[in-house]
Image (cartoon, helix red, strand yellow):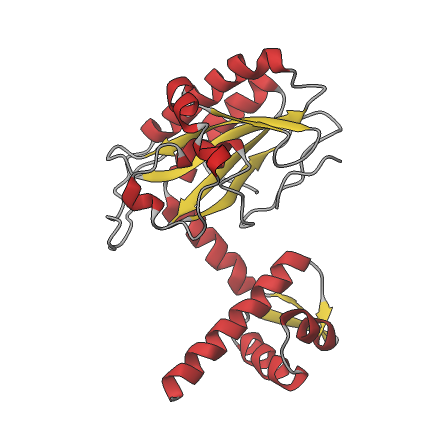
Length: 267
């Protein structure tokens, strides 16, 4: 019974941290309690414990994420390994297209924004590191899904929509996928999957732009660029990854470093 209670507290603590991360501003206890559907007294006790661990900070009665979260985020990016090697390739892709480039991480059925290089144009995409990304709507997600094995597909909580699965043969043939305003009206993107040398999924890379800057005539050329970028990222790092059943990831030699990553929104 005590063990179940402890697990419940951990789950609640993470729900508070995730909400603070999503809001990205100091929040009072009442607002937090309402958002996570917990009593204010419970929220206060959890926040008090998190504050003692520097996971949150109390700013005059309002709470925000603390420095421990920065350490955890940096540790995740470092151990992901391929992110370290990706940066120079992402920069080259951004410089050639002059559009926003995203790097995504895939972890056991879930997809996350891991890095981003902004377009130099005034109209850009808003993205946030650590935010979940759609496997079904984004080009990067569809590109990765198309290459997953039947066993790896079992890790995904939701069934793949028929219309997405119907795109797989073309994605495999071309080596990249297209999001033609499926995730966000007015935006188009192309994406390619990144797999390690043993064929295990690491994530994906994409180029996104407003449709008026990304006409259909550019889909093939930009698609080939993201495909080559994904291949270059996969080949740039000397990394040993754990088997799907478990183990500890060990990052080896790599070049470069990472930066930033919710769904793209036009500014």
